[in-house]
Image 1 (cartoon, rainbow, N blue to C red):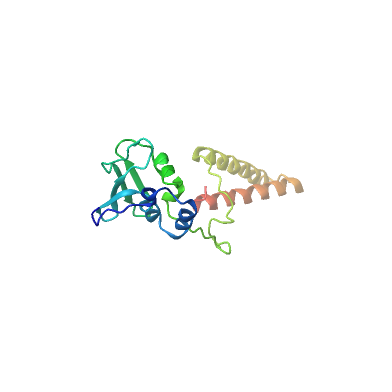
Image 2 (image 1 turned 90 degrees about the vertical axis):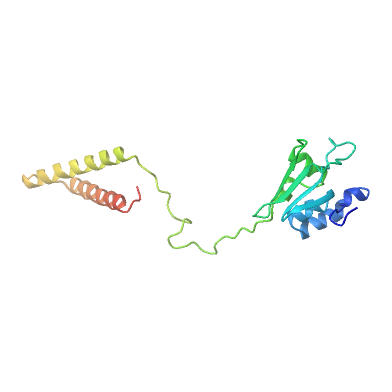
Length: 182
């Protein structure tokens, strides 16, 4: 055996599941994969060739037909040149697909940012033609009310409140359009 070739636990008479579980929690994904393969040979920085561990290679993969590469983000990329599916390869190593990826720490903010996404009301997007039609209708109602007021017509308290509410809605909608929220 040359100095560039390593033998994993599978070549030493089987896989010790307890030891593998311990290794899984203390190693990187690439270390977990490489340590379980036979006839591993480095081919460059972050790349290796090895024997495929699946049962499709009943007499052993003597050609080192399995390519292994560590991605920039720490994930492990595996390709069997004989066409073995990745899930079979990973299963034969005593691993799961999730073991090919580094653990990612998820952090949550301790409080809601003042103008961040957390706690911000959901913005409902309205198609422009519908928005302009609604604005036009509100302007028309306000215009008619002001016209009636100019002609000396009396408003009830309910009418005055409705016109005031409509003018407030109109101002709010125009402000939201101006600030790109619609």
